[in-house]
Amino acid sequence: MNLTRKATHHEFDFEIWYATLSQHTWDSAALLFSPARAQACVNYYQGELQCSSHVRGALGRSLTALLVRSLLTPPRSLHNQARFNGRATVFTAADRDVLRELEVSLDREMQSLGSDDGAGFFVRMSNRSPKDGMPLDPSSLRTKLVSMLPESISTADDDAEALFRGASANDAMTAYCGAQLHCLRVTSGREAMCLLLSSERVFVDLNQALECAKDANDVWQTSCILRKWDEGLRHDWEFRCFVHENVLTAVSQYNHYCTFPDVRAAAETGDGRTLRREIVAYWETMRDDVVPASYVMDLCKRCDGTWVLIELNPFLTTTGACLFTWRADHAVLYGEDEVGEEDGGAGRIIPISERPTEDGLPPLRVRQTDMPGLKDLVEACIMPLLRMSGSRECVAFDPGQRGDGPWDAFLELAGEKAAVSAAAKATEGSEGGGGCSMC
Image (tube, rainbow, N blue to C red; front, side):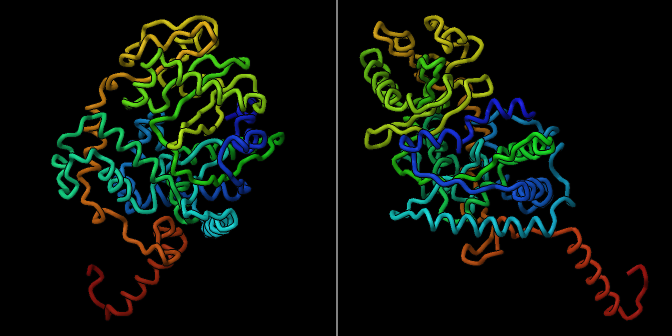
């Protein structure tokens, strides 16, 4: 990321937009994330995380990174990942101390913010969240997924086919998305560290920030954010809204992988006018507090029926368009024309609510039928997760004992490793009693 691109994205960094929109979203606090902290995280990801077979195995079994990368972020080839990872010597004792201090700081900030109901927090960085990270307990994703499958499915049997019986591909994907959201809730610095340090999204963003910092004209602007967790947040009622030159031009279902009956019914009833009016009405309460003229905002309708702002994103093609596409729907997103009925092969979308109304309501797109290829995706990604044998696949650790994992259970610095190896050889030599040199 060069300084020009960084400047373009700056007003969409969390700390910037939160300053004027805090009353429309959850209480949050920003922790200064110094270059030393960023470098320690990058070094950890490149060295300890990628070079430890124990950690790689845990990541593979949890499937969190695999699924999120395949579903929620553009895929990265193994060749590209190898450009960054597997450098066993980059992580130092100083890095280790920095990260342990960061964990303490996160604990302290959580205590300061307080969580009277014990709901916990959502952790993110200035740019993005670690939703592709590994939770403290890698088996928690599987456990939550099983619990969120339809009640008709037996959850007592660990056999994947038995657990999956009676569930459609859409049921499985809906359950996974809900489980994955649940795994982003943290209640301690250790839980937050596990997500941050195992996230490729965080690694890439911090690496880019460090690259920009090499320029003498750069100003360091990176923070770690703690947001109050909201149990009323629903991934099925989240919407991505496009605003161009202060005009709300289009709305899409955010989780465009699943079909949600309630959302579909709301879009079908009365041309979706009620739902569209709700979204427009909420946007009108906050639009005067938004600084950029063009942006993409994510909103959510809570379980209690109230609306809340999740975040702002740049009005750029680098921001996902959900059920729209930046190229095919350019005129729509820029407010230049009515929406066509072609869906570009993305699956059938309700056409009647795609058209703007006479009273200025924006077009709305929701998924009406299963996403093409969803069944194959579920078979490839979610079924292996169901086949995990629960806690037996979890990395062994004692949550109450600091230093016993998982994020710092595998820290073997190159110098320390060499010293241990030399000591072991010396011990073997003293105990060997002058035996054959070949023994």
